[in-house]
Image (cartoon, rainbow, N blue to C red; front, side, top):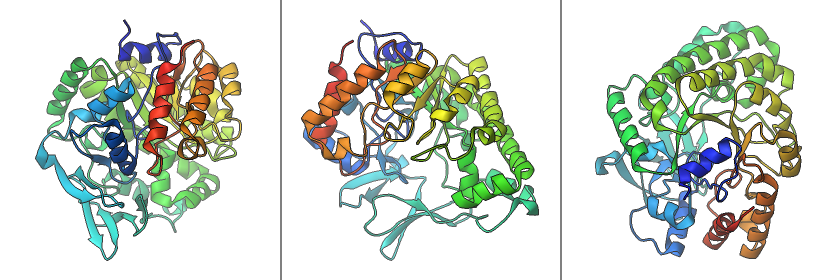
Length: 415
């Protein structure tokens, strides 16, 4: 009998398995909003555990083992092996009044009617959840009004200092100088042996999104176009830091994961955010170096999270060594699943595209969702190369009966 790990590895190696492998919550783009998660647990009759929000900005809940079991999920994130003590968590309340826990390392403070998350190193507010909003958003882009003609050093040095974002969780690539790294590595190794699910480790290695966090989105593309040499120098220096951290990360965790997640959103609704030529200049050679390092030091497969219309970049991503891509945003231009499967079958695994989360999952009936899911599986599953995942995270307004119907349909599909 196939194990969950077998199913996922079959898909990544373009083999059909006993059924389509299913992901939920194994990375930060296949998860579920905590508000929806609390309702899902109630609908499933699961009263054990709690609601633990590990990604506070996106308000994503840890998907606990009883829920994974109930829904037939074949994946799990390596991060579930960390933050096991009660002191690792603090009380908080979701926007709908549901009590929950958030990591103790998060410095969250209420100011007036809004919640802010502060960087513990600088004491500066980094993100905010406004009253009436479900999620947090960035509030500080330190170089939003600056140009790279003023020098690359100040930009790189600020990023490298750790002055952006909140304090990193265990296993995050900014925590590579953590004195507890060997302890985390042992915990991850024990965790891997204890589960037959495919383990996903989140490294990140973001390039474009790193500069967007520094300049803001609009100014990032201005810098890319107006100061191409300086922008390339900045991206190269960020890559070199990523490679240094990735070597340490692989030494600690490379044998304890099946898939390593990288991230960068290269697509919009209608097209890539840049020309293929710009992708090839700035990003492809650097992603290739990271993915080659993974393949040389680990048996793990690479996965890139990139939203949007990225089909014009897929050949370049494959040439760079990418094994799988998510979330396969099927409502975007040129991302029709039939065309993707026909063109890229046997070359890249589609980790996603199993259910449209924009129009179908929140608004359709359970029967309509089942029909939609089975159709997506019919298109994407033949020949392997498909891990079922809804398109990005399940949002707070999705009814639990729709979530249950989606996973029931995915489990029931057979070639």
